Length: 451
Image (cartoon, rainbow, N blue to C red):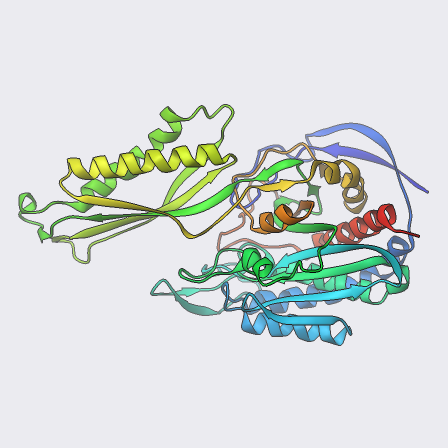
């Protein structure tokens, strides 16, 4: 039995797209706790193997980062992953939810079925990091030519999971139970009009052999190698909305001849924020309404016939979500009427994600696994994120635990965050991600093995 003295930290966790909670690790150390950890054959083997394993993980990540693909279009990514898994001799299934992959690692001792998930898609972002393995990929997205980048760090998730697969496949004699590896496409959302992601993988039956538990991880702009987890609602629900406004076109020199949809769009966009500031008690019900796209017009001297607003809604409670829907329809239709135009509101334009809930018992019982993996750079005292994750669908089916790994070694307040063209994952943090998954597997299987 190994004894550690652990400092519990509260630090800046910038969960995509959450702004950092501006407290540094150095200034936030609390009293040390005397925590004892159970050793295991898997943990001992990993400690002996970690350096060689991480050289492969880093190589895989750099390749994945250089050649990213958008959701439901991860064809080369999927083949790259499947080739590695096949070379490990695993039971590999491809073509799930278009480009998703599952693989089984069968332990030589009886025990639970543990699902481990990594997402594989990238974002329509033009990379500006100047890394030697920076993406130069481009594609068409919503009618525009855009860059493609792993700006959310999913390349790190895949590489870490491949490292876990590599290690466990060589140590099945020490594994109690089985592992279901999930490489999930379209976490950022499928193209409009398509299904995708975790929801479609479940629909196509990946949990027909139902796991006992599912674990997932996300890298984020926080202290290098630090790990955090939050019990209960950890990330918000999310859905996209679209407001279409139809008016009457005219020459820009005679605006009185128009029914101007742009002016209506201005008023609607501004008034949506009164839902949060005047209609919801945000002390107990945090929520977000953000407009991310405004489209209208084609020439400076033409008032167009139509305008469009598109954005996102984030909540932690369905009743609040329903109230926001009602208020948005009221605001859009009545402001439109005042401008002599028409407005329609669509919700869940690209589907929707439920609240990501971390099973409280899992957090209580297995935070020690993550504390050990991070050498004490750990916190369970973080705020819920208004970011969203379709890991939530998996955690609705079986108990789930989702943790965050800090990958920033240049200063939390100054480093670019997830979903930006400058986001950088520092390779030196990824070993703690591998350790986190292996520790969870080791400790959970030990507690639930039948022999």
